[in-house]
Image (cartoon, rainbow, N blue to C red):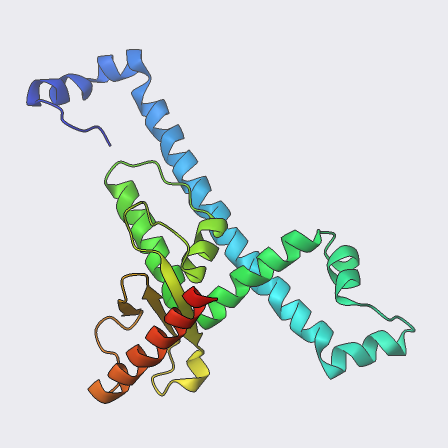
Length: 210
């Protein structure tokens, strides 16, 4: 996106001759290609994490273990990620964290993608990152704002527990503010919310006193 162009400048840059000399068509195409590849790489990482998680769940299941044993093979978790996947321990647990976020807190993934797309539409260069996604899930991301209050406590409620079939993430920051991914409707009575505040404030106080 070219910003702050005067009308005369915009007209000048749309000239076929000028665009040819400046290679703007090719440059724009490559810039879009770079943007698309960033998106594609991020989406591929999400798909990869989902597949690894499915495979690992089968590996741990009774059926999976039985098949391994029937073939005279006994694997530990370390054997699984080393021998089946060919990745390191750190990589494996990072992948599993990404899978967990997708399963338990899909709203965090959706929000992150939406913010990245909005930033790109504003002409910003965006690096979609699973590391940043994990930070958001942990409540440790600054979100581009260094003045944002730090998250003191965070937890999530799995979608299978919720009547609406959606997962919920809740954070409690250093300013004592409680935030939920269900921004439009907590789904809790005022009494329950007050009680939640009381419990979290007590935990925050005890943690600080350790």
